[in-house]
Amino acid sequence: AKKWINIRKSYGNFYKVPRNQTKLTIMLENLGMSYDGRPHSGLDDSKNIARIAIRMLQDGCDLRVNERIHSGQLMTVSSSGPLEGAPAPQMPRYRN
Image (cartoon, rainbow, N blue to C red; front, side, top):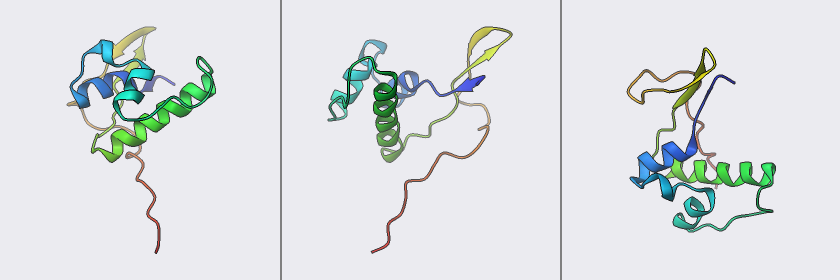
């Protein structure tokens, strides 16, 4: 993976909060959620990050690639650049 979405950056920019408010447990708490699973478990952290991403999409956030590796260096990707890759996933629609 040479490009990715840094949820901490996206969260801070979307909800207009400072970087010290973008720790996983704080983001969950601010969204009215609690941490599910064992702290510092890679799988549980990933699941909780996914829950944050889903909530951000529900709140209208347009999640885009915002970091990449180029020549071994971490680089920030401009949010005003063209959208690359697949469109953001849509929330499933349920039939009545």
